[in-house]
Structures are given as structure tokens and as C-alpha cells.
Image (cartoon, rainbow, N blue to C red):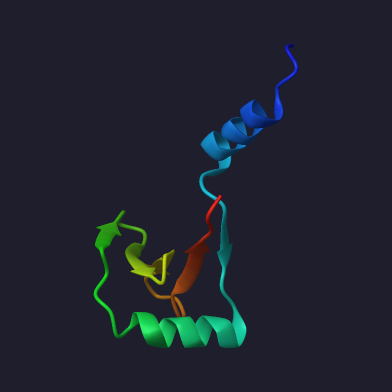
Length: 81
């Protein structure tokens, strides 16, 4: 097997794992959620198992996912590479 360069390895991880992101928690999550509720999402999707709304704020992208019959939504911040 051929050894990958650093750039090839990054491209492979990006392809497999998707863009870098983190799930917000605690006070940070609550503060961002309050701000996002004042905005309109730039897109929405429904895969029959969850609803996802996408927001852009201050150059950052946030995905708010709501799960049926579950607690509060999950908020993921997508990080620049």
C-alpha cells in the first residue's frame, strides 16, 4: 500500500468523516440556541428520523437537529478547516 502525503491523508479523512465539527454543550449551547432562534435558517431537511435546520452566523455554520420524542435539539458548530 502506497504511503499517503499529509494532504492526501487530510482529503481522505474529510471524505470519510465530513467537515470538522463539534457539538455545543452547556451555557455555550444555550447562548447560541437563543441567538439562532431569532434567525431564519438558510436551509432545512427532514430524513424521517430527524429535522435539521442550518444557520450561518458570524461566518460560522450551525446545524440544529431535532429528534422526535426527544429532549432539546442537538447543535453542531461546523469549524473552518
